[in-house]
Image (cartoon, rainbow, N blue to C red; front, side, top):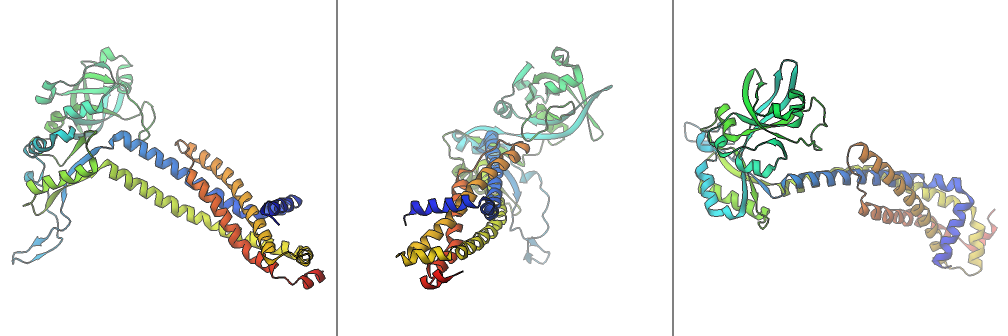
Length: 428
């Protein structure tokens, strides 16, 4: 009997007993649907995370000073053991302007922006009954160019603002809506007072930018906390850290520069030139692309773990298929005896029942894929992500369904193939 005829016989058998066929497929349907739904949600999250992090800057390198992992402590007797308690950083441990200038002289062609930022904190601007929540952060000139704010009114910071640590700020249109009833002309030039942990900071508004909520921030409400931009030197002066260096900076490499290779270059340069004699601290460089890889790997691991757990139901489904095939063979013992009496080989009998088993699993798998895609898409949309169906998961699911059909159908098929034709014809 040809494969096509076997498939037609299998389909006819399924059609003759639809309810039993559906119940047989139930385990396969649930298992495949669960795996596909998990893979769809995981794929949607991965795509969203990658897109967001790419937008944040795939070619950004974070250069930070951190404690050496192999730090040792020296006792008064000269014995060294470790790692001991880490001493706090002093001014010599920070990245200084001289270090950065030296680096830029050597590798400035590979760097498009050098970004400094300093957080003053989160607080509330109040004026009578009016209020607005803000995060106050100081940025250098490169950072403001890199951020590329969409200014609705006013101006960006000028050199004098950075050099003289002027108390000026750029606020969001949400801030203006809350504090000035949306009147930007009234906001510009106004002095505002922000309270942070009992301290008060005053700034003059020089610009208003358009606030855009992202996936990582809350949606637009009057209680939304928006960014307030101030010059970097202003923030350092208010935090009384003007004389300190930098614990971390961000380098934005040029398009032509391979950020992964350049990260090693940066780390080697700073540690060789400036931190070789520092027993406690060193420079480490992390790239956004390595963070993307780590995040994707972590999501993938969780996704696979959940898929394996969900896939256990596939084994249960396979056992169900094996059970129903054994029943089917018992019911069709005389048919098997007749076919063997007419010359059917053991191989053709075995192939017939394996084909039936595979057809049951494939149909169950296809129904499971439809359910899985639907459930996964609904779940991803409900969680706020764009649904992204994993094509590879669908291909794997179909192949896995076939494998289950062959694996769990072989034993019943082999049992049918080995039936003695005389005994089979006498079977009642």
